Amino acid sequence: MLKKIKLLAYGCLASLCLSTSLVAAAQKTELTMYYPVAVGGPLTKIVDSLVADFEKKNKDIKVNAIYAGNYNDARIKALSAIKAKKPVQLAVMFSIDLYDLIEQDVIVPFSDIVKSKEDREWLDSFYPALMENSKTLGKTWSVPFQRSTIIMYYNKDAFRKAGLDPQNPPKNWDELVSMGKKLTNEKQWGLMIPSTGYPYWMFGALAKQNGEILMDRSGKKTYFDNKGVIGALEFWRNLSQKYGIMPKGTIEWGTLRKNFLEGKTAIMWHSTGNLTTVKKNAKFDFGVAMLPAKKMRGTPTGGGNFYIFKNTTKKEREAALKFIKFMTSPETSAKWSKQTGYIGISPKAYETDILKNYVKSFPAAKVARDQLKYATAELSTYQSGRVRKLLDDAIQAALTDKKDPKTALKDAQSQADRILKPYR
Image 1 (cartoon, rainbow, N blue to C red):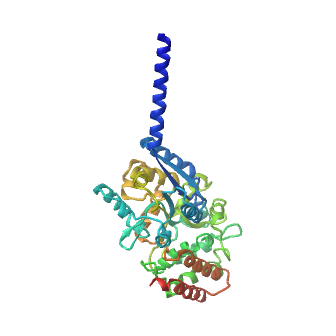
Image 2 (image 1 turned 90 degrees about the vertical axis):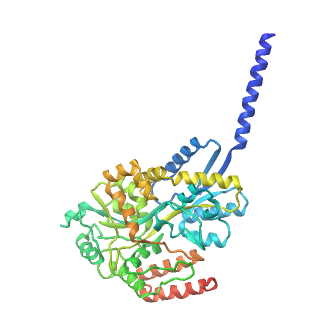
């Protein structure tokens, strides 16, 4: 009889435990996040690790990361899920998707979600240059995470062979040309700037260096045919056509890093998001520097921000905000920056021991951060996909000699005006 009572008691206890577990599982807030990974370096393992760290500290929240190729893939898949009424609460998408997402009425501003003094201080903690693509209409719509500037990678061994000082990479356009000529030989180009993938992004750097920006802050007007913008495209084309330090035609974004690591170019312009991968794989002494100046130094910021979708419950928004605050905290941002090469997104990230020690041992890790003082917002407008394609096509037409730079950019500006006119 006693044995039966014990078995009954154990059975009740087991049932109670199972019931408690089921209740706890039912109380968990589940989040679905779309994330782009085809942008530089093996990111999925790093993101999975950060998500796991968050879930250990927040047992009541489950985050399902769906990896979706490049930024365009992530946006398309996230929006498709929303239209299909599938659960999706947040995503990392291009910071420059802002106007399109507002127009489609699918995101909620962070400035409408944060309530406490602590949350407002967090929202104001990021580098101002990284927030330029986050704010419009008096609201903050996204926050930075996977952010970058364009930096100049160079092969110090190649510099030595060419009789150049490896500690003094080109600081301006004239030096870029003169050094590029010395670095160019039968096996190696002096310079490669990618002109597929994100040509408008690279061009934004050249335009800023020549004293120009590509659009106004309202997202309703572009300046593609300004004199300095045309001059920037003429210089880009002249790097191959006139100076002979870069291959003619287009240069592939996806293979440029490989070309640099294989010694096919002495200098490349690329995202700081490649820094850790280059550090791990370079078989030669390499350096990193800010982009050279013409009238000034300059680079657009780039990369992805966190967005929260409008079709979410109050509880889901609170959980999403909690997760995003964790992912953008100084400690997590520092880990992320060290593991990937992307910028630590707040000054406090560089005050952590992680980045203090890393920057001390590897000074190249602070170049992209220091360059933020010369940075401008990335090209972003209403109908941004169409407008960016106009500029991409104009750049490639000039580089492949199908149009002269002035004609290509005037044509692009004329078409951009037609697209943006209804928004003015």
